[in-house]
Amino acid sequence: MALDNTLAKVKARRQELWQQQPGLKADIEALLNAQETNLAVWMEKAAQTLTQKGCDVIQVPTLDKAGEVVESLIRQGTVVQAYTPLLAGCGLPQRLREKGIEVVETHLGALAAEWSGREVAHPDFPAGDMETQEILAVYRDKLAIDGNATATRVVDNNAGLERREILLAVRQYLRAKAEQAEFGISGVSAVIAEHGSIVLGEDPGHVRAVSNLPPIHIAIVDSHQIVPTLDDAVYLLRSQAIDHWGRDIQTYLSIISGPSRTADIEFKMVNGVHGPKQVYIILISDILKNS
Image (cartoon, rainbow, N blue to C red; front, side, top):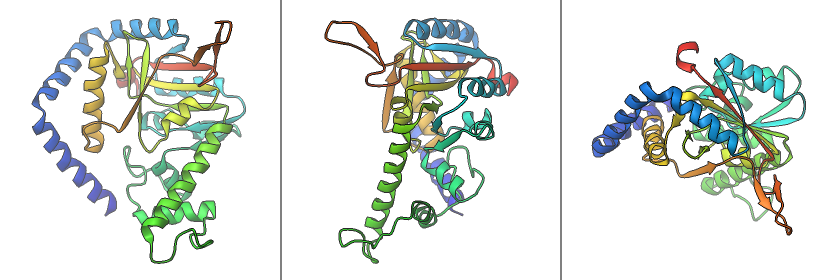
């Protein structure tokens, strides 16, 4: 029932937003038409510019091959992963856990589904079949949060404060895991071929922490997420937000151009001071045909 209600609200909001923005609809249709003709050129340009920015670009033909590459890159250590349907299609994180590697899911919905022993309910709403109080109870029990432990915490009749406290504890837990992890794995929202940049949308996946805190970031890209310019990326991101979540655009976007770089006092470039030392881009070249 919870999932049905959510999907009904998203559908209604999606229809309303598209009706309000016929210009965006036309821009997206033009972009998709151009992509059919120019995707191979955009992919080549993206691989070139991303490499120039210091990323390691690995092109693979299928989702399964992308999962194999991730396995080859991660032989030990802890991983934080920001759930996306694309990563699930690669068989992650199961294939890493089978190797004895700790994988921590950072998407709040996917985490709730995992901790409650459920399958993902919907690609965009992994815990969509769970009511809010049920999700909070899963978090509270897993982290042993006692809402009435001290006078500064929640009292029985203040459910709003209890919710804030539980979510804060979960976020602190995930932040600590991201700070300790050797690898962060995410999808992307778009790749800008002209700039050699990846765009990450911040959602319940805590993708910013996943991409910034571990020393190695692995981003898995569907080739159809590649666009030529920043303007095109904005069109694509708005379209994604409307279609998937019934929102005009995501609340926070990060644009990343290669590993973290800064100059020391002698103006020598140093990698990894304020972000990952190494960024791998795994580009799935023909996902629609081979998935």
